Image 1 (cartoon, rainbow, N blue to C red):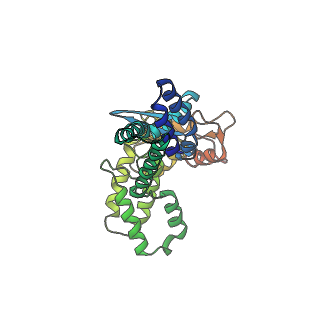
Image 2: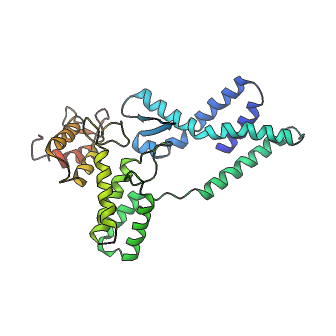
Image 3: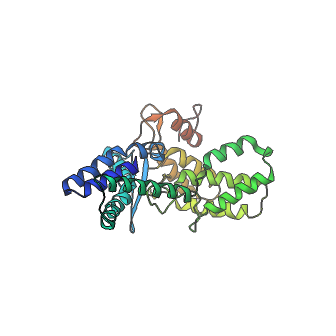
Length: 293
């Protein structure tokens, strides 16, 4: 999709500004399935960085932010191609005269080659959630060699600020908390097996997790996002014994803010109620047999 759109943009940019803007708009709309099929659908949030400015678009916050997030994600995904395509087209025309349409074909081939090279050199991402599920399921059956490989992968994903995971959003400086929590669980499992260096990495992981608490309480996918029930519960369990009672109460209050009139919970304060979010919240706030605090 991207190479085809980039070649069309090259042809359009050789014409008028109106046609160029139309090509950008249409291609952005056509590219929507890409972010829709990615992690943004699962998390409902995207972290965007421009220079030293960062912004979190949270789909649970408002409809306008949800729509803006999708279009911004799509636009930034294509931005590099829209800059490179007209330059490449102009270079081909400067090299020599071509038959009508041949320069567009060459541009398409060059962009396809660029994408292929990018895919080849891009480091494959590790699914921390899948890795965690497998290790928790297999338990002590996992051998030391496999644990050493897990430790190596986590070490590669460790960031200077103490975060663990792939860079989230579009150009975000911070990792998504969902990945960091999966890394914490993995490091806990590995450190319990006594692998060298695991305990130190786990301590760094927990120290960073403390910094990701929202000032009003709760833990969100990315900073300044809405507190999520599941992540708040998982973070409180991981940080047990490391946070004081006033902080715990503040986080519990963020969980209670996600409660609906019928007693069920949404994954955030503005999301609709769901069985999954309710089960997560009741882990910390109480069960069906006990009144909620």
